[in-house]
Image (cartoon, rainbow, N blue to C red; front, top):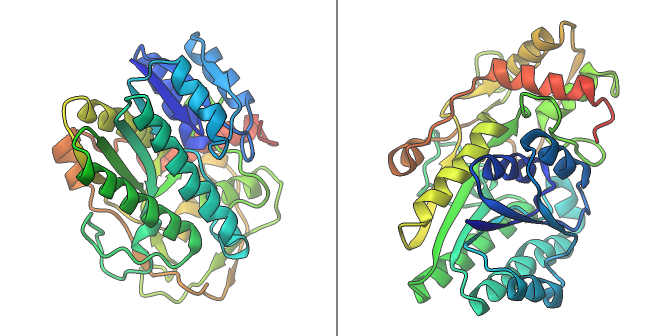
Length: 335
């Protein structure tokens, strides 16, 4: 099949693009490179020994987007493009709504205009907000506590309405939890702009000497070691979930929501300890007060994806840390 991948140069987009190429698909990669680098796609081509057609285009450029759809005969779209920094979304909410919501509207309008009705959308567990009930299931209340999460909710609602109004659409809304790890080659991985927003890349930067210590926000939660517990999923498991969802869309219509997580939680200190073992060094950390909005425990119930897609996460926290460290130590400055 010919697949358009938006945000293809990003962390999850690049790993999924790699698997699409390995599965024999023809990929057109679209990215504005605002918070990613083309080098990731060059390395994907190096690993797979297959070529990618790349277009540096912003989804807000509806004219150029429409030109791509007019030129190519796509079978489906995997949509990763968007801004994703929670803290930044509080400072620049309009930019987040413009990019994440309006950009998606431009995309689906071009898709409909050119008869492409199969879409895999990169959503997030942030849609659940600060729910204290675990495990989180797909019908858990959506109550995002930040503008970034609310953009994901709005796009999910738009795509749900679109599917209900037009039965030709087949849409997967993938809510993933906390991606970590890297391709086992160590050639591609996570390369955040500025200070990482997530725990594992922050720990990795401390381990490689870029930062002095990890700040642990809260050690007085009602968990085994007092620190917050989250569901960490290997990026390769996550990429495989997208391939499974794409396969499901080929034989079905409607909008589907699936959690992509492991169904298991790990605490902040457990992650630091496991990464210390992978790196062979002690990772320094300090305890700071809790952050507003953080919950003690959050992890997925991934049983719907297992039942519907035949997919489940196979890699554990040890492998995530080993693979992430291999990437970080061989690419200390990222790409």
